[in-house]
Length: 273
Image (cartoon, rainbow, N blue to C red; front, side, top):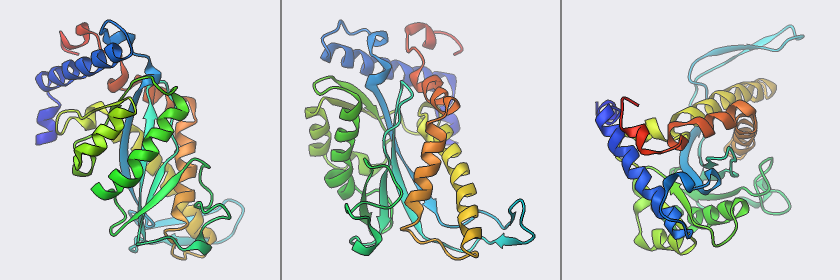
C-alpha cells in the first residue's frame, strides 16, 4: 500500500520536483547557473544492493542440448551473498562490490592478487554476519569503493549526484555522507517507497540481472551434478550476469531511459506525466 501510494501522480510530481532541486545544486557546484538540464548524464549515478541465493526459486528440470540425460534442480536452501551495484545515466555501469557472509576471507579461495575469482579487476568485497550491507561496511568499505568507481568515470573535482534509497545503512553516519561530499559526491535519497518507480536499479536492472543469474546458476549446478554452490562461486556468476545485462545495448538503454534519468524539466511534472 505504501509503495502504491508513493506511485500516485501527486507523489511523483513532488519526487521529481525535489530531484530537480538536487540536480540544480549539482550544476551550481560545477560552476553553472543552477539549471538541472545542464547536468551531464555522466554525472548522475544510482547505487543499490541486490541479494543473491545459491538456490532456485522453484524445482526446474534442466536438460542440455545434445545430452541424453537431465537433472532436477531443487529449491534447497543455499548460500547467500549481496552485491552493491552502481550505474550511471550515460549507460555506464560500475564494478560490483560483493558482500559475503562470514568474518574474514579464506586465502585459498582468492586469486594470487587477493581478489575473488572470476570477477572484474575493479571489484572489491567485504564481509558481514548476514551477507548483507550494514552501516559499518558502508562506512568503512563501500563508501571508499564508491569514490574510486565514480572517479574512474568522472574526473576528480567534478560534482556528481548519487541517488540511493533510504535503507538505514546508507544513512547511518553523517561522517560518511560528509566524506562523500568532500569527494564532490552529492547524495540524494528519493522519497520513501518511491525508489521502485524512480531508480533504474531498483526494479528493471536488478530484475534482469537476477533472471540471468538464475540461468547461469542452473547451468553451474547441472555441470556440478546438482552439487551445492558455495558463496565463493557466486560472485563469478553474478559478475557474468551483471556484465551480460549492462553491457548490452538494451541494458544500457534501460538505464538511460529510466524515469530517473529523463530530462527533469518543469514540463515533466506539470501534467499527467
